[in-house]
Image (tube, rainbow, N blue to C red; front, side, top):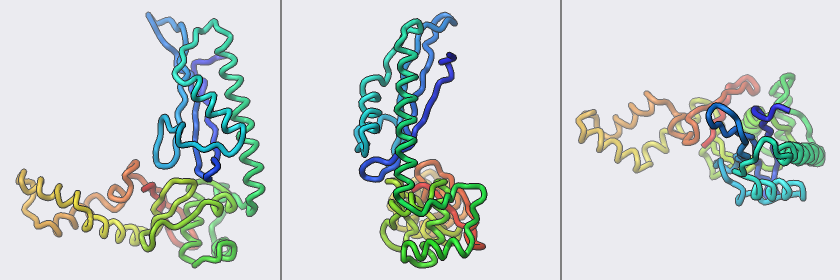
Length: 259
């Protein structure tokens, strides 16, 4: 068994319906070009955070608890290559991940509306918008954003419906699986970024620093407008990675970006 490239990720929802991606990797310890042992590394991502997020996970099932116990016991352990525990680590992690994957499929079936928005065959047309409106008893606008986010997360209608909610009002900000996303057209998100830019005191400070350094002669409002037009809305709204994706929903291009 080649353990040098071993990596296995599982995705699950905990008791608070927050989504977690957890990955175990075996990293070789190299000394004098010869591999002697491996380090067990386990990291997670969810709730707008990543790394050692173990204490934030609230297990929904016994298997999820097993994963957390395994994580707590084995993270950053060093294992010699000749030790049989190396093979046991891989076998046990595979068992846990496979069991969790099976549980998630059953959970998805229980949620109903198994239309897969991540499928290549899925087309977010007016008919799908109407289905979401009926399911959620929501406006056309919310249904369009719901579908765009579902395509971004590659999940089923039932999965997303179980956790999708608006954060605040009028800011195009939505929460799904414990993570927040901005969803809307380019013009809508530009307007949100503009409001944020002019209300955020941090940018006032940056303007004063630019004036002090003689990097600009513009007044505050003109400078803020220049920043928005130069950098675009995404770096202002997305403090995670500054990126966004775009999806075609009922004839409209809808953008999705982490907050």
